[in-house]
Structures are given as structure tokens and as C-alpha cells.
Amino acid sequence: MDFSHCFEELHEECGVLGIYGVEDAPRKAFLALQALQHRGQQACGAAVCDPAGNICVHKGAGLVKDVFTESALAGLHGSICIGHVRYPTTEVGGMENIQPFMMSCSAGRFALAHNGNIVNAADIKSRLEALGHLFNTTSDSELFAHLIGMGAKKGDWASSIIPAANQLDGAFCTVMLADGVLYACRDKYGFRPLSIGRLGDGYVIASETCALNALKADFIRDVEPGELISIGPDGLKSLRHSHSAGRRMCAMEYIYFARPDSDIEGCSVHAFRKRTGRLLYQEHPVPADIVASVPESSMSAAIGYAEAGHIPLEMGLLKNMYVARTFIQPAQSMRDIGVRMKLSPVRSIVKGRRIAVIDDSIVRGTTSRQIVKMLRDAGATEVHMLIASPKYAWPCFYGIDTGTRDQLIGADHTEQEICDYIGADSLHYLSEKALFEASGRAELCTACFSGRYPTELYGHENQF
Ligand code: SF4
Image (cartoon, rainbow, N blue to C red):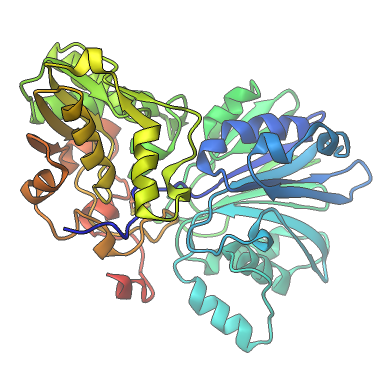
């Protein structure tokens, strides 16, 4: 099998933030966006409503700490703002795509940022282009902004956001700032998390509760699927842009993307992952002297597996925090070196031992293969690979960068074939039933494991 043309890791798509009625909102945004940094490291930005009601945007390529320098923060003033961290997925990674976007229409100026992926974006864009709309970017946010601008009435933004959001199908969490009011809406399926917190007399809305915690904001509730929130001088109002189409939270948010100190729709991410580890042991106990996690997202699952099996949890693999992520290495040869620089086995621990390695997922298999080889080279006598999620076999169209089906090793290979490819003594996946059991939920999006997509695909199925 040759997967040398493939990237290995899954990538989060962006995080959003909104702050209303909080003193020195730009500095608070700086802190909260850093807490969301794991959702996107390519670029970030904020739009701030200054005391005179003008919206000022500051954004750039790079990490939050590098874009929001002390001099940049010194020039931003206000108590209302929106923010964004970005990882490019279907979009080209150009500067013009960095959010928030500042837009103008007959009703005035507004700023907007979003995460997720609109599955019917191409259809809507063709319709708008036929009407003469011109687009500066390849972002779904600009599409949403055009739809809002088409029906906008001065002083009544909600009446244009609602029909605009109703036309969008797919995954989106959007924050918007106009006329000193903060708006936030979530798609009708609830694919991505979006939580509301209280901070003093003001509010914070963020993709994950870890950003609320960073500001010491008190969690109030999640934005509901299909809901539009507005926060202005009259307080927080709840409207609907669409009927809810269930609660199809992305399972990979729990498994991999979200920080373990976040809660998603009432479920601790760490607790979820630990339960998957326990269930993985119940389904697949392997003969092992130690359990080791692939740092860092599988640590919670490894704790669960080790506890359930009464097997010592050891630091068999160490992560070097200061190496660039493998996906920025263009050639496979460089990516291989990147894996080895990023992860290294602790020889004194693995030598002469049978190791149960816990990982969150296998996408292309190249990293798993390297890990198994590294551990064997370091003296491990057996390497059993245990995956705390079902086999990843279908592409995601809701904002996660997976490429096409032929780039996924799980698409048309059996567990035994994948095991042979990565060179492990055994390979086991968590069942979908156990995944639901760990979440305590009746509904999740599990399309990348099952091929059961919660939405129409509008031609994306041609990528199968
Ligand atoms: S297809 Fe997979 S990665 Fe995409 S939203 Fe659904 S569960 Fe998440």
C-alpha cells in the first residue's frame, strides 16, 4: 500500500469567539483565542466595536501571541468584539481568507467570522454569481455575508440573518458584530460546539468552554442547533433561524479536536475519552506490560484503558512540543522526519516490554507505522495498537480536512491489512456502539466511521 501522497493528521477547522459588555474586550479576546489556538494555528483576528460605535479589525497570519502584539492590543479599544482562529480546509490559505471579514451593505457595516463547512455553498455561490455578486475570497463566511447583505434593513439585522442562515446547509458556528450588537448562530444539526458564558455584567460566546474558563466566565448554556442569539443593550435574546435537525455533534470533537478540559453539551471531553479507553479494554484486552498513549489527545483514553486492565500507564512515547506540525512539511520524506522529531520512544521504559499503544484514530496510517517501528527499534517485544474510535473510512464534508476517500487507509482495507501495513502485533478499534455509550448520547455525527451523513451532500459524493 502506498499512502506516501497523503497527509496524516486530521485538522480542526477554526474556532470562534464573541464578547459583549466586557471591559477591555480585545485583551480578553487575546486570552480566549489562545485557549482556542488548538483549533487553528494558521491565522487569527478580531473585530472590535470601539466606544464610538466604529468597528476596527486586526488580523494576520500566525499564532495569537504573534498577531496580537502589545502594540496591536494598545490600538484596540472597546467592550464588544468577535474573534477567530483559523486552519484552512477547503479554502486556499490566502491572506484574504483570514477572518473576521468586514463587510458593507445598505444597512451599514458589519463584521463576521465562522467555523465549519457549508455543503451547499457551491449551489448558493453560483446563484449569487448569476445575480452579479462578486467574491473576494473562497470562504463560506463571505457567502453568508452576501446573503445577509441582500436582505439587510437598517437597525434590524436579525431579520436578514435568519433567512440567510436558513439557506445554508451543513456545519457552521457564526459570530457577527453590527450596530453594537453581538450575534451568534449555530447550524440546525449542531455539528460544532458553541457555548455561552457570563462574565460580570457581560457575556462570552466561544467554540469551547476552555475559552470561557480562561476568562473565568461562568458557563450558562450552549447555543442550540438552529438558534440565533443576539446580545445588545436589552440583554440576551434567543431567536430561531431554522428548525433543529437533531443533535449531530461531531464525534471527532469528543475524540480528538476539543481540549480535554472543555465540556461539550454537558459532557466532559476528558471523561468521554477515559470512558472510551475503559470500553476499549472491555472490547479488546491485550496482553501488555505497559500502556502508552500517543501524546497528547489519546492520554485520557490511555488512562481509561490502563485503569480498566490494571496495567501500568507509562510514558512510552514523548512529544517534543517545539517541533512544527507534520502537515506543514511538503514532502513525505520530510513528514517522516517530522514524525520522528515530534515523537520519540523512551527506551528505558519500552525495552523488553509488551506495549499497548493507545491512539485516537488512524487516518492514513503513516504515523502509526512510524510509531510501531520506533517502539520496536527501541526494544519493545510486542506492540499492540488500540484505537479509541471506530475505523475512519469516509471523508468529512463538515469542516475537517480529510481529503478524498482514497487517501484514507480505512476506506478499503480490512483491520488485518491495516495491521500488516503499520507492522503491529495486533490492531483493534473501538466499536460504534461503545462510542455512543461513552458519550451517553443518542445522536452524534459519525459519518466518517459509518458513511451515514446527516445532510444531503450536494454533489460532494463525487469525491468518494
Ligand atoms: S464526518 Fe466525522 S469529522 Fe466530520 S463532522 Fe461528522 S464525525 Fe465529525
